[in-house]
Image 1: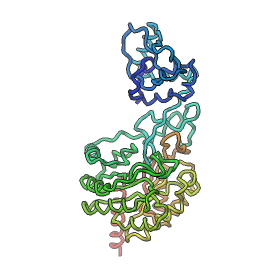
Image 2 (image 1 turned 60 degrees about the horizontal axis):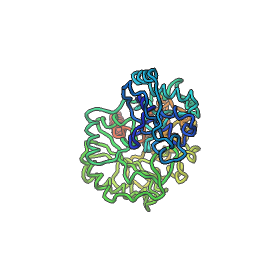
Image 3 (image 1 turned 180 degrees about the horizontal axis):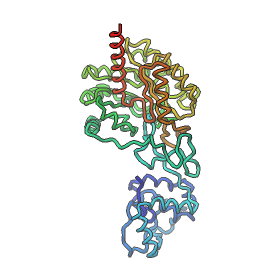
Image 4 (image 1 turned 120 degrees about the horizontal axis):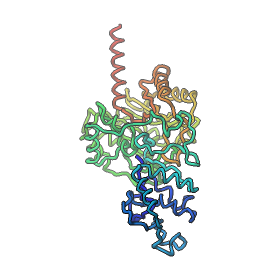
Length: 463
C-alpha cells in the first residue's frame, strides 16, 4: 500500500527515524539534491521524515525539512542558518490537510516535484534470495522502468499494468502456515521461503505434506550471478560447525513431511560444502527416517567426488539448477558456472548415486530465450538423466540485475508442461509463472510417485 505522508514535505524528523520506502528518491547524490533551487520540492522526499502532519492551523511557520547531515557541511543549503523556516498561508495549510485526508498525498507530491523538474525514480524492491523478487504482495513493487520513470514496454505485459495479473498473489495465511512460521522463529531457522519473500510460501506451508526450504552454509555466496540478489564475497565467514546437527534437530521437530536443503556457492571450501550437506541429511534421517529430503545444490566447481559423496548420503532428491538456456549462460550466471558443468553434475548424481535416486533441475523464462532453445535445454536435461523439470518466470530482484525481457503467459507455461511430459518424457514437469525450484516440492514428488505406481499396477493387470 502507498503511504500517505504529506507531512514528510514540511517537518523534519530525527535522523534515526525509519525512512519511508519512497524517501530514497531525494537522497544525496540524486539529481534532485544537486540543485539548491529545488530544495522546496525536495522537502517532500527528505529521509527520516515523519509520517503524519500535526493538524494545527495556528502553526503558520514550520521548520523546513533538510538533509540530516546538512549541519555538518558548510556548503549545505541552510548551513548558515540552522533555524531556516518556511512560512505557510492558511490556504496552504488547508491544502496540506486535504491532501492528507485524500490518501493520495504522495502521488500528488511526486506529480508536483516532477512538474518542477525534480527526477523521482521508482524505488527498487530487493529480496536477498536466490529465488528473485516476490510478485504481487505489494502493489508498489516497481517493474523494469525506463529512464523517465515510466514502465518499460515488456512483451507479455498488458498495457497500463506494472505487472501481469497472473503474478499477483494473496499474502500467506492459514492455521498450518501460522504454526510453521512460529516454529521457524522458535527454532531459529533461516528459510529461503521467508528470506526471499516467496509468493508461494502460504501454498507450500499449508499443503497436505508441508514443504519448506532451509538455507545452510551461511548467507553469503562466493559467486555473483546477475539474476540473484544474495550477498557475495570472495571469502565469506566460515560455516557454523554445529549447523548440520542443529538444523536436523530443528527440522525433525517440525510438522513438515518434505524438506529442501539449499545453499549459496562456497568455492572457498575444499569440497564446496558437500559434507556439510551430507551431515545434515544423515542426522535428519537418523532423527526422522520418514521425512523426504531434497538437496538443491551448487555445482561444487564440477567436482564429481563431491557430487558422489552427497548423492550417497541418504537424500531422496538431488537437485541442481541449470538456470537458463545454453546461449544465455555467460550473460546470466557467474563465469565459474556453465551449461555443460551443470549437466555433468546432474549426470554424476545419477551415475554415482544409489538406484532410484531422483534428480531435478529448474530454469527461468523471460530472459530472452527462444522456444527452440528451451526445447534443446529440455532434451539435454533428459539426456543427463533428469527426472523432474521445473520452469518459472524470471523476476528482476533490483534495478542492478538483469531486466525482464518477456512475461511468459500461463498458457505458454502449460504448453511447456505438456511438451516436457509428453514429448521429452520427464517424470514430472512443474511449469507456471510463480513456480520456483522448491515450489510445493513434496506434493510434486509424491504425486509423481503415486501416478507412476498406478501406471505400473494398471500395466501389470493388463498382462
